[in-house]
Image (cartoon, rainbow, N blue to C red; front, side, top):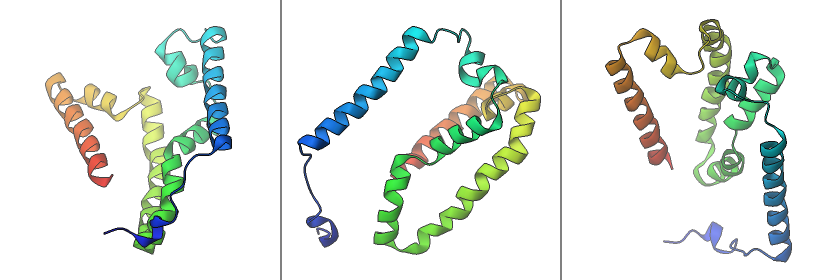
Length: 150
């Protein structure tokens, strides 16, 4: 059964759409190529992933915000609420509380131990076999949860 809401909304890319799309891809590729050629300052994973722990809180917070709210979330949420109703807004509580919990509870704990992820906590506190088993379980459960939601 087709949905009458979306029957008339199908459209195709026009010439200007392709121009804008190609321009966005070219700019993104140009930035990547420039930094690959000229960057060269980051020699270790510590420098690349953590900026040698020298960044202030603002750029880190903006980076986390950008990765937390993806384009699919920003585009899909209004459609989800329109089609399924406002019960989706219950997710807002988790979306607001999770970053605060992470920033004020887990962040200082991870920073003090100089670790980056929960998987490093597992490796520090458990045996290797148990740590690998839990890491595999957490990775698979996250993967299957994502597949079930999508």
